[in-house]
Length: 187
Ligand SMILES: Cc1cc2nc3c(=O)[nH]c(=O)nc-3n(C[C@H](O)[C@H](O)[C@H](O)COP(=O)(O)OP(=O)(O)OC[C@H]3O[C@@H](n4cnc5c(N)ncnc54)[C@H](O)[C@@H]3O)c2cc1C
Image 1 (cartoon, rainbow, N blue to C red):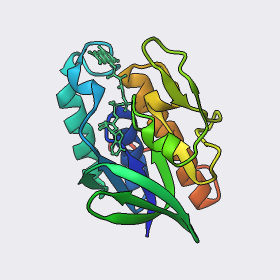
Image 2: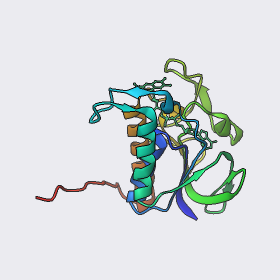
Image 3: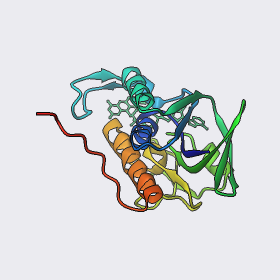
Image 4: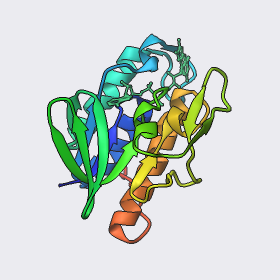
């Protein structure tokens, strides 16, 4: 049983996985390699002078794996409620997790299939988004959403930030107190 399963390894999903794995949470990331970020040339991501979208996505995956996140290449086809969590199905295999974060970018087919409330997008060229509360919760307790699919502005610094925000809320819920992840520069 994973603590957190994250669907999508774009900026939102991988950023969430960096935080949950670094917090010692057993983290699974399932990704179908259809990130829109792979078409981007990025010069407006704070702290990074310039970078290609594919590089940013690859670095994000490596950072999450550095802290122990398990990355599975595949498509999550269904999510079903089980006793103390959820069963996530892919074409090859199914997994179990206490919490699930959907970070599926433009794709809302899985969300609609499992009964998550969706609504029209507000950002340019975004058709449908998942209806989430300010902390990233959906209408199904234990399923969260982050990034483009959760309706935030479609920019890497914002989608990555939203992934981190939702991850910290999931970690805090698992820990029963607010979580902070600060490393200190050694003098
Ligand atoms: C041409 C272009 C140029 C851009 N230029 C910039 C720029 O200069 N600066 C900037 O800040 N932003 C730019 N962006 C926007 C940036 O790419 C997005 O803002 C953003 O980062 C999207 O992140 P995300 O994680 O929400 O979605 P994505 O990066 O799309 O990631 C979603 C991931 O979820 C996976 N997925 C979906 N459904 C499933 C499923 N059922 N099972 C498994 N995996 C699934 C997909 O395969 C994908 O890898 C650009 C976008 C485009 C298209």
